[in-house]
Image (tube, rainbow, N blue to C red; front, side, top):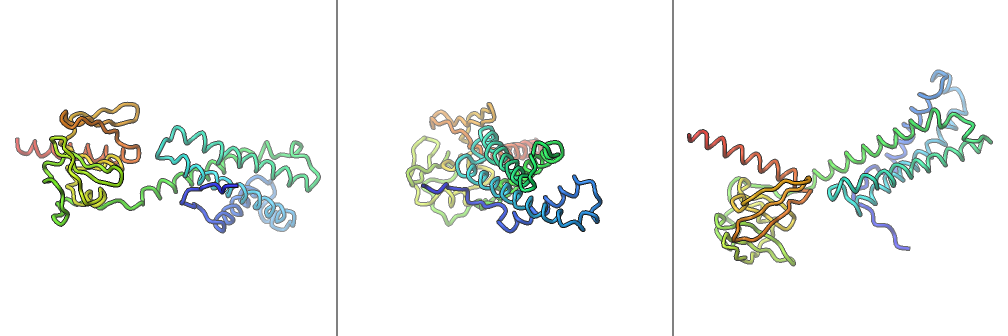
Length: 275
């Protein structure tokens, strides 16, 4: 049987998961049970319940993390939030909650009790559900933070003269990569092969003029004839001679919006000063 491929980001490790499970279970038991904490700490049954419920909580946490990592690889957040949420609710919330309920059922069977005859559904189920949602919220925050920490090419305000472009920078409309080869396209629409990668090119291009709109395309602001925003997408229609329309990737959309508005505002401010 083929081993499932998981996302590279591992979130909480096993030790951290065990600590979280123990802490969460302790707080839950102390909150729900009526006797004072000092009284509970003198009862051996409290420690036994804490131990068994910690094991259940640990399995739930690891299961939720496993489901999240599987989705990170197959349906990453940045590809489509709308498609990811239902899958996240199923694999990382609903199924772990089901296993939590089954684990608690086994726990009560050890005491020869039916879970339906206990206070689990009236006092514990809501708190367990809330805890799993909080866990998934933490995992989502950690994923977004890790995504933002990924190394991005350092942009420079001045042109790096050490890199050899096939065209003068003022004549480059856009750059693109295809089949492991990179090209610079002039405003006449003719592509010129480059011996440098897009990543290196991006570090040398003026930040105010060029921006990475997709992994495969860097666009000169002057080459954009029309910008269309529709249904949470951004499409760039380039000049007529270029005969190209490019959709900004979801991953780069926020950065592109920031770049476009900041440069636009700066140019507007400079034009006012000249007037």
